[in-house]
Every structure is written in C-alpha cells, then in structure tokens.
Image 1 (cartoon, rainbow, N blue to C red):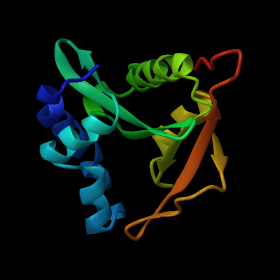
Image 2 (cartoon, one colour):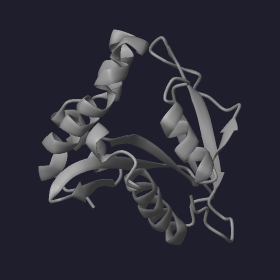
Image 3 (tube, rainbow, N blue to C red):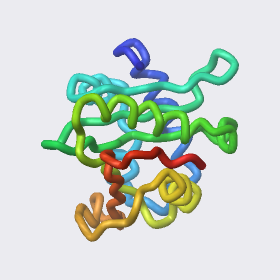
Length: 157
C-alpha cells in the first residue's frame, strides 16, 4: 500500500509509463493521465493506492476509488522495464483482495483503445468491455471494462 510520501514516485511512474503514448492522447488527456505529485496525494485521500517494487525500486502503481458499490481502478501503470514480469497481475490481485472484503460488487476501469497490452491483461484477468461510459477523456477516446467481483473464482493469467 502506498503512502503520501510515495506520491512523487507514483507521478514519475505514471509519466514514464505513458510517455510513449503521448501522441495518442490530447494534451489535456495526457495531463489527466499523468498527474503531478500533488494531485496524486489528493487522489490518495479519496482511495487507496499501491506501488509494486522490483529490486527495491518502484516499477508499477495502481489506485482505486469507491463509486457506490463498485470499485473504480485508476492510475494503473507499469514502467517499460518492469513489463512482462507479472506486475500488472500482482497489482490487479491486490485491488481484488482489497475489494472483496469491502463488498464491492464490481471492479471497473476505463482505458484507451490504443493500450493493447493493458487491454489484454484486463481481459485475461476477467474484465469485459462494457457500453458504460465514459467514452471520452478530454478528447481522447475511452471505453469501460467491468469485472464482477462476486465471481467465485479469480482469473489467473
């Protein structure tokens, strides 16, 4: 679980993880996707955040916020150097383990259609595309993915 002292590292991971996709976002959407450390601290007041370590360094992050009976996943990123090592799966398991005892009915996230690797991860983990919004982040297309957290078995990649 991350602490407010991790906000600067989290902001750095978000920026470094998404920089290769910068041209696919509008300027405003990229800024919203890669918030500065002060905004990360503000988000941490709304819900938990996690960091993933590899060799003692932060290489991944994810956060969540309650929305009624649902838990919305946001700010999930893994540095390029950490990809392919199961870090995304680890973060999703942490979020699922957090959601389960809190009675969250669904896990929800929004993603952009050009984040192919992330979409495949979410699908392997049991998320399915939904027609629910939002469909746009400041001019960048989005779609929503949902997982019923009440399923008896957890998806294993």
